Length: 121
Image (tube, rainbow, N blue to C red; front, side, top):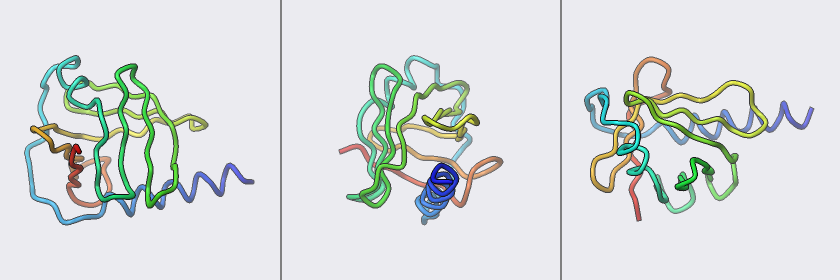
């Protein structure tokens, strides 16, 4: 039961964090797996309490409003970011792009809300 409640809370928190004012962008395109993944390494902030951490070894974590939502492994292919959260069987897949110090989770098929920007600090 705790796992079900945690899963529901995690989904709601993630959904809320992806609802933001954003600008329309392209679909991210294929920028190359290694180059794109290396560009992901680091901490990406939506605000001071909500951020992703992507490590060089393909692991990471997501904090939302100061609460650890979950740890994950990640991979990239053709402008799609795949997160495999610990304790979940289905991966979370986003269209995305990295431009300079901005990570944009793109809206569209399979994504919640509008484009969401995270800034590298």
